Length: 88
Image 1 (cartoon, one colour):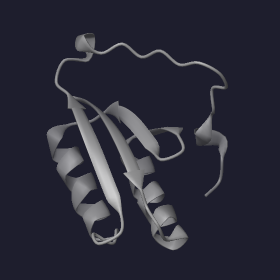
Image 2 (spheres, rainbow, N blue to C red):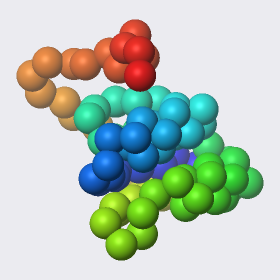
Image 3 (cartoon, one colour):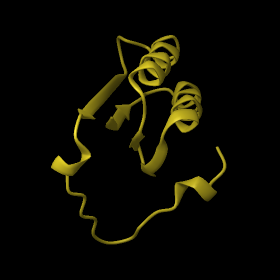
Image 4 (spheres, one colour):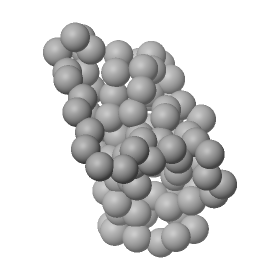
């Protein structure tokens, strides 16, 4: 399945940890957004890892699952950031 993950993490240390976890499974496309193809098993593993890191009283994580990638169209405007080249 294709997923889009958006997050808002308050503390910088937890933000960096969350980003490292997500980067193992998905592609970093925007500040606070990852996306990509992932199996349900790997998605559950990823979520489990992130849940251990975030502060559930302050932080949020949204996961949008697309069961059929043909049903989504991606259009971007402006600068196309290449976060894969950045260091954490």
